[in-house]
Length: 327
Ligand SMILES: Nc1ncnc2c1ncn2[C@@H]1O[C@H](COP(=O)(O)OP(=O)(O)OP(=O)(O)O)[C@@H](O)[C@H]1O
Ligand SMILES: [Mg+2]
Image 1 (cartoon, rainbow, N blue to C red):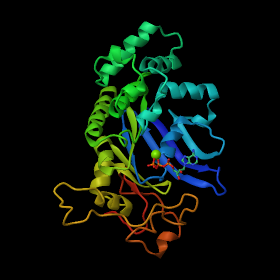
Image 2: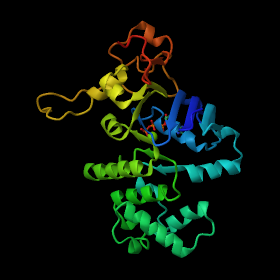
Image 3: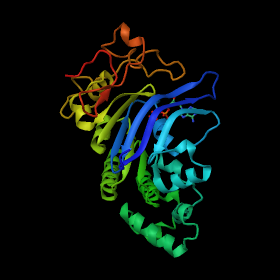
């Protein structure tokens, strides 16, 4: 295996069994993340983006059934002892999630959050060292008066500031990989663009590998090198962003792009394109291509079996659609 491959996900299936009928959340995903690379996962709600990315954390849950492999630097996470798995999580991974206000414990000061985070890796870190490092991290995410702010509690910050603090915390132990799961969904558009600029800057400065998740294909394209388009628990298209945007092969990706607002379009005269229908029920996934019930090109063959993942030429651009043939 090449040295720069950090994570490889192979034939990942994740099923939850807490309900009368199993929930087929992820149904065969292959993904490869190289060091310093940004992969953007896009797709509608419930398509399996978070379950796919959280497979990197290798958390066991009583009702979760996982098959396939998640390899970190060539090593299968399932084979690691519980102790090594915890070590790997603490050292290799950082997480920025969707709702900053729900990610902080209201009774912990910001100082305490940093202290707890540093102690995961350095149990004997001194209070002075915690303060010095936390101040630097808060400066990095542009929080002013960091020394005073360390004494504050989560409710004393705006959502945008809390998200900056969460980014600082996620980078506190110098992870190689940052999982940013819809990091700006809960924020207004101005704050969103500032947070995205901050994340992009930090990613390139620290040469972080990142999995960036969003519903918004334009946002994903802005941040990522590679785009992964998911639907109904499977990947319908994947490739370098210019290929996926410029030589789109999956009708679903095409529809996602059409549904984005465009500069200069007059929405009083022309309605925004919408994808009709609803996402499939993960307890009753359609038998063939999961997008076939909504796809404007669908034919009988589409509902027979899940299409193969086909390579477009000799590039790293892949798609699943029996009706499409790349040029
Ligand atoms: N811990 C869990 N227990 C049971 N079902 C789950 C669990 N986590 C996710 N699911 C189900 O798995 C499916 C995929 O969920 P996932 O969270 O990956 O979607 P998503 O693409 O991230 O959606 P969103 O954009 O809304 O965050 C959903 O049907 C969800 O209800
Ligand atoms: Mg999610």
